[in-house]
Image (tube, rainbow, N blue to C red; front, side, top):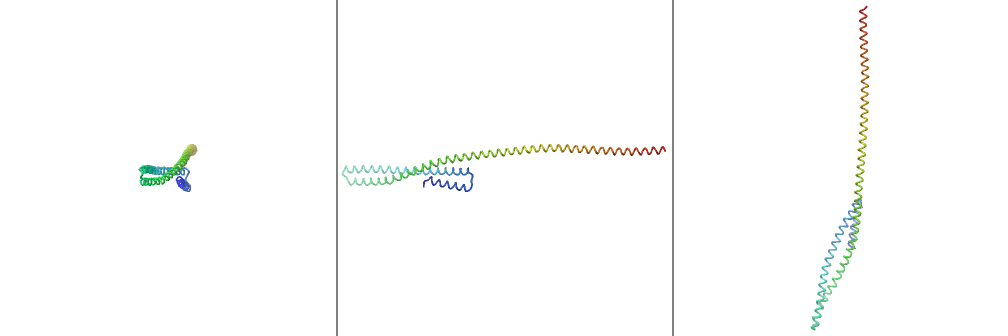
Length: 222
């Protein structure tokens, strides 16, 4: 299983958990972006470790190749001096070096293969991350737009309510004025009526007094 495949499984598991919690899309994409960024960091760390290991093996390989070349040259010198025993000993050392070379080279090839896979995974993950960031930005723009619309509607409703209350206050003021005028008229009418009755009472008193005076005058004349 590749490194990216394993990290993808982790991301998918976290995404599924987010879906189970019914989180909103923006949170979900943000989680994916975070997981992908962490995965990229892990891939870079793995790549750096592999490169360091490859350099160490390459130094060992170079050393063993130099050793094999050195003992080969020594074997030739020994033969020139007719020392087959030394030539065999030199060739034995050369064989040891070649065995080390044969053991190191496959390890370097394996690391190159893994590095190639890591590079592919990194490129693929980077593309996915770019897409996810674009999707996250899209959701953020939508969210901001929705907030602006909600705020605008809220302000509009608030203005409508303010206008309605202002209109109600105007009507209430007009009603109060009309009622005040009616009350004033009723008070005036009541006052006029009372005045008329008072005048009648005054007239009755005058008539009674006049009748009494006439009776006195008639009595005196008799």
